[in-house]
Image 1: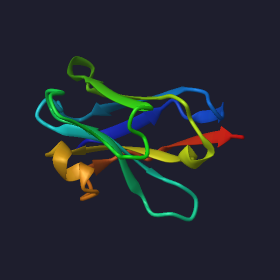
Image 2 (image 1 turned 90 degrees about the vertical axis):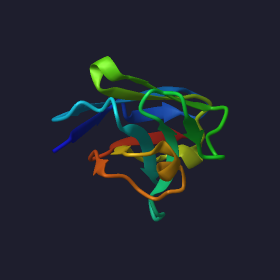
Image 3 (image 1 turned 45 degrees about the vertical axis):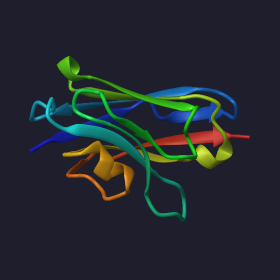
Length: 124
């Protein structure tokens, strides 16, 4: 079983930056893709970013391209999401996810394991 714990959420002003991290335990994830999804109030969960097992393939939702950067350190079983130029529409609970393929995550096909989420609130 894989446990995912996100951290880094909080309140940030519009135009600001925030970094999220997610550390996995229970299994080495060198052969798994990792990613981030988010769910805004009253909306369905949506794909944000995903990175393949070795970091070769990276995918972003159009809404975050050029502003968010996903990365991972396999030695730490950790995936990161650096968020810049945040706006009100980025307010959401951000979920870390693990799956077999980053490309599948990018089509919002879901993932095999999920964290409990961390709330990011962008104030105007």
